Amino acid sequence: MSDPQPGFTTRSVHEGRGFSGPTGAVMPPLYLTSTFEHGNPEGFDYTRSGNPNFRLLERSVASLEGATFATCFASGVSAITAVVSTLQAGDTVLAEENVYGCTYRLFDRVFAKFGVRVVYADLTDPGNWDLIHRHRPALVWLESPTNPLLKVLDLQGIARVAREEKVPVVVDNTFASPYLQRPLQLGATLSLSSTTKYINGHSDCLGGIVATNEPDWQDRMLFAQKALGLQPSPFDTWLTVRGQRTLALRMERHCANALFLAQWLEGREEVRQVSYPFLPSHPQHALARRQMRGGSGILTLELDGSADQALQFARSLKYFTLAESLGGVESLVCHPPSMTHAAVPAEVRRQVGIADGLIRLSVGIEDPEDLRTDLERALTKVRG
Ligand SMILES: *Cc1c(COP(=O)(O)O)cnc(C)c1O
Image (cartoon, rainbow, N blue to C red; front, side):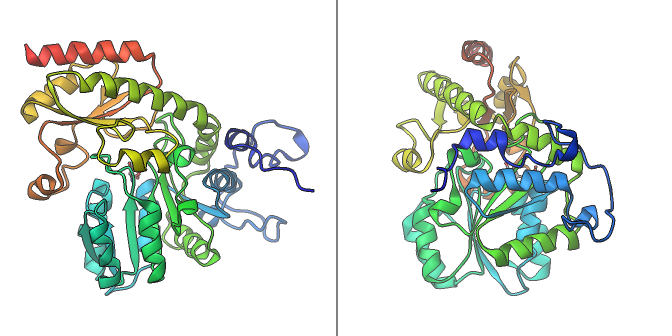
């Protein structure tokens, strides 16, 4: 009789122990070495193609994603590069139109030069899933919830259609984290995360990871890690292993704080619209409740005002630092049109619904009342 699978939090605390060797160290050592003696039992050769600290992170995240394999990279963008580098000239990617700004830029400014074509569509609309049959793309690129509009895509529904055409599906799972959402269990081929965000959770290093159950895809990811030089540093992966040990606790608090603030902001007259997957007003609310364990820590609001007023609001907050990125214990505020999505042409921004007054909050784990008071003061200030 086998033991039942331990729970998510137990796995995140205990996975990958056993690198301590004869010393009994409870926490893993940091393997600061570029190379390894030939013929060692674990098969390491050179840190560009693997290091014990990478392996520890890869085991932990694979376990949390419910995956057989994971490969870590220097950043989320490195992970995206690794996946897209498997394509050939002439291939088509079908992508959700509201992808992360740097994903769009990579496709548009880099991979387009190598003959990879991307068809963008609003994949919250099941009417557009037929594009999978029509284009038979080499890859379907999904993100859910999306950045910054927090659209929620039906991952299971889209993966089902893709399977009919044998098209692999990649899901950028950064905004949800494996605590809230497991794309592979919903039928995706690859679950990709920027570990810079929730998985590490402390805004002190960058990283990316790709989890899969398919050995062929795992081989391709390991090849990309070493052949393209996309590997992280041992220290960054060490920090990320430490960060992910508290993922479940942090996510619970991020979700509770964000829901509390979203509900409060919805009642404010200065705010035209609030978007948060677990608010009943969210267009895919029922789907979000089915697909995710919580609404995560990101919410967006559209201020009734100009881009300048939106920036003024963001700058006058005390506990929300005006900065790119998200998913750390500290709250951050971002004005996507002038920051994360500045690389997206203005007309494309307008088409996909990124208004000038749009504000994205990454709600941290602070005391919720302090965050609410902070928002209230800044709202009063822009109104006055
Ligand atoms: C931040 C982010 C990335 C890129 O990750 P980096 O670690 O910054 O390179 C990719 N996708 C999403 C959804 C992100 O938020």
